[in-house]
Length: 353
Image 1 (cartoon, helix red, strand yellow):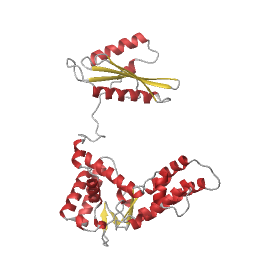
Image 2 (cartoon, one colour; image 1 turned 180 degrees about the vertical axis):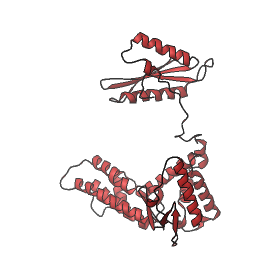
Image 3 (cartoon, one colour; image 1 turned 90 degrees about the vertical axis):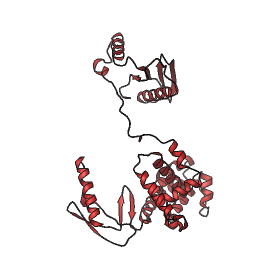
């Protein structure tokens, strides 16, 4: 096993090196999960001993896979942030409830829920400390006495239990993974569920259930079918966008001081030469004082739309909003049959391109 790990790590370092990335092996850590064995790996000439725990992207992984240390770190950080809420709730300060709730969401709750998709399967005896901190924070929000139950506080503040949030976060992660066929984690999810089914894991104690199996069973209980998710599956990952041709050559030929007649003549000539067989959608955004508007125009499809958007929006926001609205209109309308189905969207904003 040691030789396999060393070989795989060496191959990874070489692959990263081929794209200009260098691995600092002196800062690398190794951890063996759910075993008392200890090994030493030699990677790129550096000896790396296994540790009982390792920290990665703010998550503390431990060899027992119970995330006790990670939850302890979250509790310590949330407790420090709780002092601010307490200072606003005592000493005669009349801080509005909505302000205290915003502080709770951004400081206390954000600390309590960091990495919750990973540790949501941890025993309740370990996550109990997080619930206690949430209860203390909700008492600060409401001014309730110390003996008030967490359930009553959650109803009064319209803030749900952390356990429900953890389940919801894992369901969202599971759905995103299943939804995208190109997600590399998707196969791992499926393999874990298949392995659990073959081993009849449903007949074993809850503490031995894998996170993926438990989430899969929760989805079934809520009647969230994988088949329904796959029906809406996207063909490509959202970050793998097709190349869009953008022509900004007019920027080098024309300027703000160019005469309007010359501007019109040069622009129309280029449009007709390069995009004669395209449907042409013109978009623009404008701002006057606080009022901001967008416009979309196309003669053949009889599009002539003007809309107000949020006051004090930037020109770039208006230009991008016009482009987005044009795309929505294009998707709703059908192009005339005698015209080419290619579409040319024309914007006067360089920033939006």
